Image (tube, rainbow over the protein chains, first blue to last red):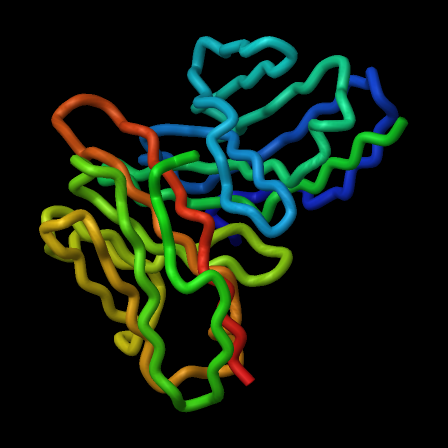
Length: 109
Length: 115
């Protein structure tokens, strides 16, 4: 079983749609949780951290359920510029990042 | 930009050769990690250096080795290259202090092709 599992997609949605990504992780000792965004042939960039209380950044909402070891990302009012690969990431206590396979999102006009 | 640079951008090697990839971290970042990203996969942790000592390693064989220097630069060395080593190699740096997790900043990567 992979340490971090994501639905690889691809997700193809029209502009303005709401799309949700889910992720599960296996290591209950994981310390920190993130969503990264990666554009084609570029490096991953931090989209947002994820907290148990849930957090929102504009059109993006992230949730963490430690009991279920489940992380989610919701994107509302999708834009063409949201097209990218979204990576679910968990961190160990010493900073090792474990990435999911990534979920490909394509937003079309 | 993240302030983390990597060189070279692209590299082509043949099986059995050795390669050295370089990373220059942000000033003040005492921790650097290296990741391998195969096509269609998420990055995989190779190892991490903290104050010039390796303090964490992923599931990679000993032919993957590294160095971190006092001037915030680091190297990833791979010996006896195999075809499966073809990937994007990413370095990420951060300041590891006593507080909670600090963001890691990724460089643009080196794309290695092994023929």
